Image 1: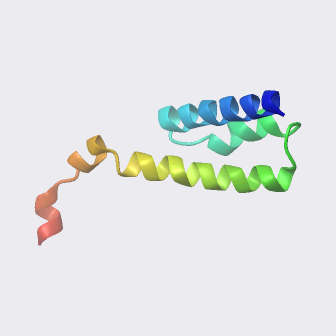
Image 2: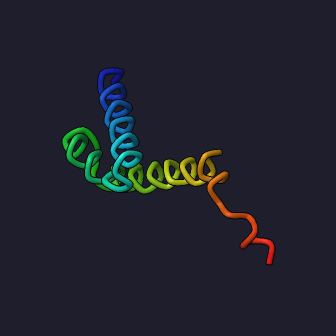
Image 3: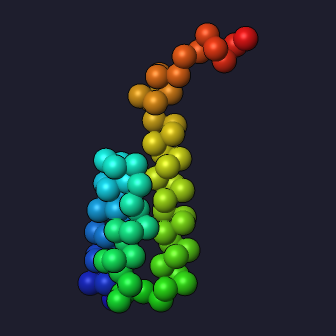
Length: 75
C-alpha cells in the first residue's frame, strides 16, 4: 500500500511539473504512469481534481497577479 502511494504521489508531482513547464499534459502524464495502478474511473477523477488545483495555484500566484495591468481593470 505504501509503495503504491509513493508511486502515485511521484506521478502527480511529475504531472504538475509537466503542466507547469508546458501548460498542458497533466492528464497525459498521470494516465500513462498510473493506468496499471488505479481504477480508470478513479484516475480520471483524480486527474480532473489535481489539474484544477494546479491551475488554480498557478492562476493566483503572486507573479501572475503582478503581471495584470490594473489600469484596464478599473475602467
